[in-house]
Length: 517
Image 1 (cartoon, helix red, strand yellow):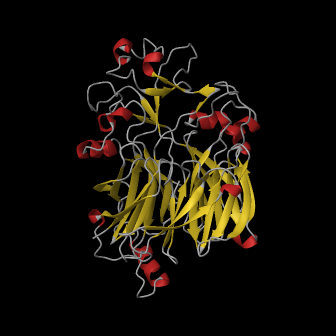
Image 2 (cartoon, rainbow, N blue to C red; image 1 turned 30 degrees about the horizontal axis):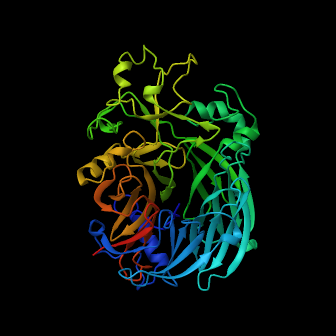
Image 3 (cartoon, rainbow, N blue to C red; image 1 turned 120 degrees about the horizontal axis):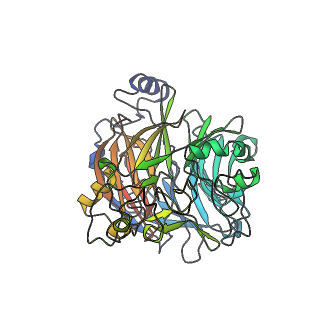
């Protein structure tokens, strides 16, 4: 996943004082933090490049000094980082390839800071410890190799460049012969890249209370209602994505399959809290969805089901001590040879009291095709389901990073916009809909903007987030197939002096660049 930590401050009602201080304290008169005439609704495609087949363009990072784009590729047996000249976005040119096969297996993420490129590379055997490899962006020489936890899935630098952090997902082997801890690594750049890797075993004693609030702990070796060992608890946690505060002191990590966000104190190297995210009620008009791919069309209605938020990407902006966390609520399913958690509603036994119209609900045209988890919904353990929980929330949300409180959810706005634009893929209705996956934040003109990437509709939605309690939709952009990573390049760092958005699409290996006019 693409690092989201673009430094910006809220304008308008939210941060007038802080913005003024920021401009006065840190900006040269010729290096403005924004260009006031830029219109965020004017983003349009200005260039693209195809760097290969599926898997060839997953995540990108940008170096403003060399004007180079570094893009992860794991296609056709290749494991590499493609280097692309972005000095002219209308004419993207591939200029080099960094072969990373010597360091392990797939490369999953990249991040750039001060002439250094950090790459997250999983081990050849994914359940073994992975690596963060640091290169120079000028000549691609290796600066350092750092061992981290198993399956580093995302890497990012802190704002001040003093730390590198990785979310190490720790997925099991497909037969569960090995199941490593899910961990987060903190790498101190100034201390010769010394790494501290944190696991979540200390939270095992809170299992019951956290699960009551929506944390998911499940799978082989986990029995509902039975407290598990600290080791089993740590193995079940799967960190996905990291965002870091502007003072480089606090990090927030999405625990996607666990439906939660963890907080980390970077300087003390401690995980301080886990915030379960709860569930979304699809039995409300504003949350209406189409749960079937076999109902003859696209029909949004309310249904007696809930969604697990299960966010992938996360980004943060702060105001007066409140960190606003933006999440893309993709959803994810554990599907391994030894364990599969999902079933279609039509294959479940529904409680007659909770679902008096169960026969109708189980038809393909209703809820029958919808994929739901078998790990929730049977609290009385009588073998039938009193509630139904689907994967993801088909939305983006904003949370209070101090206490985990939900401040805003986009409800079904993303899907409505894609349906209207003709981008919606009805074949994904029974799964996770548009699958919001990517999130980028940036300042465009005088407006703070959120970009939300949707893997299954091949689109990016643009929102004005001047009021984080009520973002305003601006525009929908079409991307390549299955956009995995979004990268915002502010005007002051852009080769064209206009704000740029880079969308890397793993489905067809294309990179598209969008610019304001």
